[in-house]
View 1: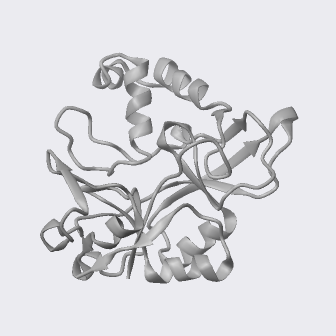
View 2: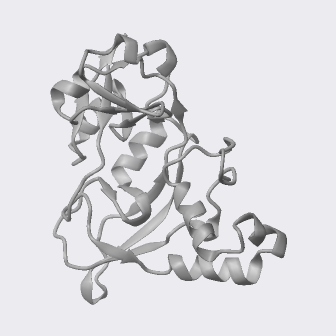
View 3: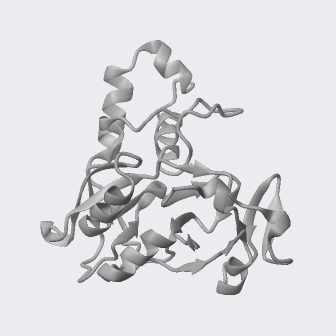
Length: 232
């Protein structure tokens, strides 16, 4: 069984509003003081273009040539946000949270489950969350870049009306439970994957195996909305 998961929307336990502690400064320093002139020219000698290149790595496939933009390289150490300052105090945060620039982060128990099922597949790094007045959130979090991209979606075997398409990119029609249940996913294409993004189906945002979803439920992790899909 495949599960489609959605990123959260709106301020709350799954999307704490705030800003990165030092990320902009790290990228600016690298662009101005470490990069060669030739490397800067790859990004049109634009700091903003380089920043966008880095943030694209949070959600897009690494190493695949892109039509107009430079091919994404693995997220380097200086490109990893190390911390996040929230605008207000949150008593509890979800085990998976969304942050600025499309980044997601997971807590220690969720990271442990993912790495046990798929060791070495996804990129993690320590990530500190600070509340107002410098109080650090007591649970360890990690930034994550999902390392698997698949072509498992089968529109021709999906329920009529469950998806929309534009320029070869598909989305669930309304993101409802019934829509997602009608989206067909190829078991053969998924194989042994447990956590992945789809190259052509962009809504839901990422996908879980039955084993991963069962572990999440067993441990009692708080995660964002996700629904069963149609396996074919």
